[in-house]
Image (cartoon, rainbow, N blue to C red):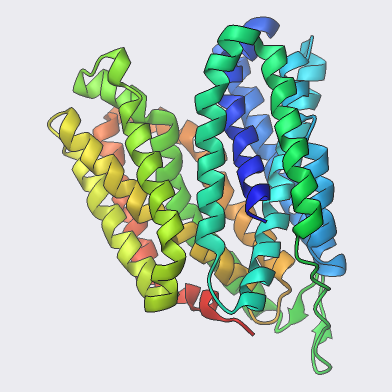
Length: 379
């Protein structure tokens, strides 16, 4: 299971160093490239509820394997697309496969948590973070030495290799039978109905409010360091490095923390640390303080989303795929769509105010953290 998360992160990370080549090869303006990146996110978000429906009917094992296999050619197609129409199709395909796999593998992780009677979701997301770091870190040197096409093909081979292990060892989970007293709803919902759906949507909003600051760190931290703190080009990536490293380390520790203190207490502690991190970033007088802030933000955000996804997969009255597809569709829009709005706001206010202001979202997460108590449910 962890290899599915690593492979998904590896493809997303590998896409980052491909973007400049993609834009140059197709002669895209900044606006056109922005629309391409937006299409990637929209493809992912559109796939998520459809995959949730399939999971509610046949379980998560087969969709995870199918989507992992479909992801094998995703980056090669992006790296080799010769013209804009085919590039649009490649971008949508990559978004659909990576986004769809995200729902399927998270649903399978929920099933594993139930089987093992302990938390594993944060560690799974830790493997995703490691995959992203490897994909982005190795992608640049490979492209420099071998070219973009070769990098795309090598990435596809790595994804195919991980699929061999995933297909062999993935947990087989059968669809949950509907309770006798429950009326059947749509897409795996078991009434319970509106209350269960509402709870899953609310958990998705908690994930969204955690992922918007994550998107701000991924897409705008280097710009903030350069434009507002006067940091040179060589050091501009240190903020994202501090954020990513702290997040990855704390994700591997997060399951033990959640098992000891519970999902709600862990989410509250994480939200509190993230609030402090955003305020430190917003009021940082220089590079050192900003790096401390981004590291604190990575620590704080590390386990909120994994806990939220576990809670969404355990909403009473909904099958795991249904609740997860709702939460992931809402949550991932925070990384895939919100950063463009953040850039527009920062153009008028500056990034320091934006980062400090994003702390308000984590205050809401802190206030609403009781809603993730279902993450501890192991029935």
